[in-house]
Length: 394
Image 1 (tube, rainbow, N blue to C red):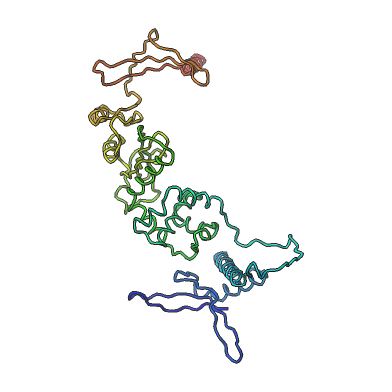
Image 2: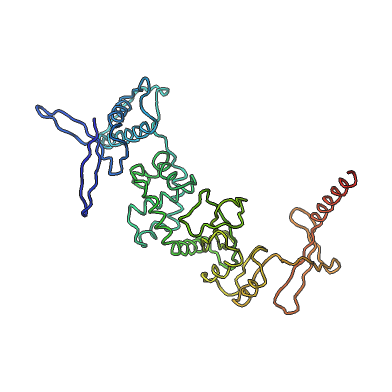
């Protein structure tokens, strides 16, 4: 058994393909039979080919090397190739149901050895969800070929099951997941750039994918997009990120003020389905991005926008009123005009008392709801009393 390299030309491009070959004698002649096509992205160094071939022979024969002379990286390649050879052998020698008779054998279950165990549960769930959402059909409509579509599906499900980089996703798909068998694709032969190109393709079609997913979710769950929630978060680069113009320093929510940041804005409906996403510069302020995000939505008039107090500036609220949106925000006012006599007391689900005071503004543009929690007031009194006691004892 040995590895053969063949020079190939396609569309004026020259490249090498690799095959695992075995010499077999047929009468007076010796022929070379191809056992497995290793593809064009076979990345084992030529000096390691003899060790790899010996280890594949050992695995097929059920032998362990004493002492082990195969590095971990070569061992991984050997296990993968041996498993492929065994799978091809089973397919080639499988008997038809009509010709198969009873064949009862005694097997020592303690002698069984599992080669390349792989997960399949989360892959089934992920594929089922993608079929319900019509994603693979959408990829075809967007002009993504079969290979690119499979890489995109693999990248998405890998992020669901084992969040990480494209490199980590490629390793998980090729070594630990059975998704390739479900799709009829050998992820282990994918080159290192395949998943990066799939991510670029998904990013290029982001708007179409987001619109399709949201519309499909509305149909599946019979929802009506009347409430819109908007918020920002950010992540950081541990390097300098000089090639990313949006990587700028700002207020890090992970408290990594020493790193350049990238900001992600999400618009969601009341059920948590993403309507739109956008990547902003790391130093962007929340209230500067609201108009840009909502302008891109086809939200009905009088839709309710829910925001936190960091976004709810007077300019933003004025813009929302002009555009016909309703809004629900936490007031940025420091003074409160709570009237306990006019308040209504209710009980929460946990049986705690809350006093509510509803006030209509003079211009009729806003309704303000002042809230007073008995439990929160007791907690704050306790904090003040503890500080006072420590001060007096000191």
